[in-house]
Amino acid sequence: MTAKDAIRYPMMMSDNIVNSYLGDLTDADLLLRPVEGQNHIAWQLGHLISSERSMIEGIKPGSCPPLPAGFDEAHSRDNTTSDDPSKFSTKAQYLDLLQAQRKATMAVLEGLSDADLDAPGPERMQKFCPTVGSVLNLIGGHVLMHVGQFVSVRKKLKKPVSI
Image (cartoon, rainbow, N blue to C red; front, side, top):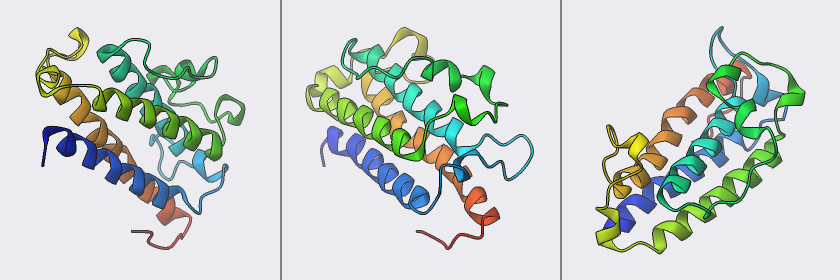
């Protein structure tokens, strides 16, 4: 296994889990808050897309597809309490954006050498991700941190176990 394989695998696994958990959910389900104070799935998906884009742009500026106008703001930490459906996307839109971003992420990963992976990460992330490789490695783990919260929505909706 190469360093790139070790980075790639958690991203692929997290993609499969996201798709499994979202498969039978509706657009309205993405706005459900199963407990007070929990971010709904729509916000979390947008946050994951924005975050991954920001991390990759920090590594290789100009390598990511643009996001719709207002997307980052709608999914910022300042907007976690919004339940306004007009501020959020559809499930299909989130999945398209997630897939486009992941394609850009993988393209950046493939273009890096092992020495590039050891280069310093973006300055704003260096306290917890000191290298480019550690930033890329964080992406799969970050998704997994959030998808665990999708289970409470599935439980509240009495959806079957999907994994």
